[in-house]
Image 1: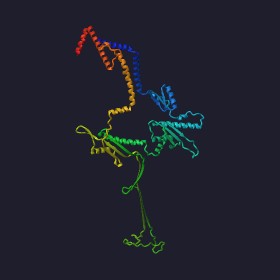
Image 2: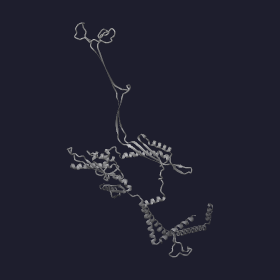
Image 3: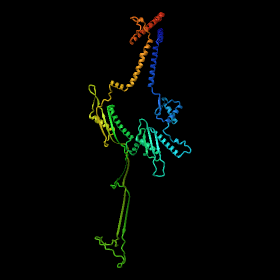
Image 4: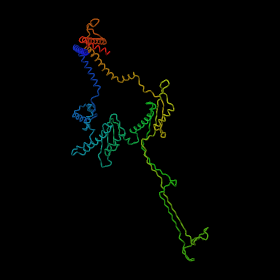
Length: 560
């Protein structure tokens, strides 16, 4: 067996040498054509690979001013980082060095923000005029405000212009400062009225005596934005972006609740809900003061009580010797209708004249008065009314024949679903909530178009890409099967001798046509040569060592 393998290796080596000899014997034009074909295939493969690769350059900074661009390029040259410049102030560097380069440039303070800040005041010249000092201060304030505004996520660049009038000693001639702000927003970003109002307050707080109404804000397209801030300032109860987002969030919460509770029953996608929520964003405060009467005497609370009692007596008449004249006239005789027995008018039981009496009683009671003072601040964003609409698909039912069909729900099932949705959404009839549940058959919107239609759509949408790749594929196939394959076959497979043709030698200049016929001749010739080589090797082994050949045959028989 080892000798057979060695004979096979020798045969292959001989075939390789013969192929090399036949390649050297090829005409010059065929060899040149082979070289050109191989080079073209390699170029196509390498070009396609480079074409499909991601770009090696990535944007480092964009919309860079000329001054900052010059400083950045100088720093890149010092760091030995290659770069490319594009229109619009765009600087690109190799993709693997983008983030490292940004960090290194940021440590150097590049790129600088628009304008200059208070660092302009660091290098003041000695003897500078007051006008120049005031101008530098104004430039510093403008630059610092621009940098602060650029810190907002929606703002890419900003410029601030201040008009600060001179102070006057006359009150009538004093003028308020004004400001103009130009915002360059990030692509695809919007700024709402609340943010505009915040920028107005920011600029107003940084400049003494600058009211927010004297600030004008525009974007890069020239749209006036300060009117939005003024409107938001005047009407605090108006809806802004945050309030609209809050309303949408509330509605999505209700929708999720309804669909979550119906999904286990009907399956995913068989129940849809839409909710409209009315919210009250008005800010209200109320104060109430209540007084409760003290009607029951026992429930009354006495704060204070005063009682005053006084008694006055008349003086006793003058006395003296009977018959004597007196300087006092006698009292009027009393003639009561009824007197106690043994008494006379004006005479007491003891025989004395009764004195006159006068009594007076005063009583003052102060009661506590019930008083309740209540100050209530109503919450903002309270739900006023909720309206929900729910549509449920027909339920799937299997009949006796095993066929599935969709049937509508019963009234009992609809009632159960109605009650279930009410509990999920927190239905409150006192505030005017409404709910409508409808059972209807859903349209089969999940059905995909036919394969032919999808293929046509794909070809229509990508006609240029398909033509491009198709042309490239045709060129590649022509190079492989039209040029390289015939030449390689001629080199690998030797020409068939003329005596092997049954009909005689081939006519000069006549060649076999048809690739299928060539393939058949090549396979037969190859098998014949291999069989002859193996047979000759086996004969040689038997001739040299019959004992070993017998042992090999015995092993073959035992294996079978």
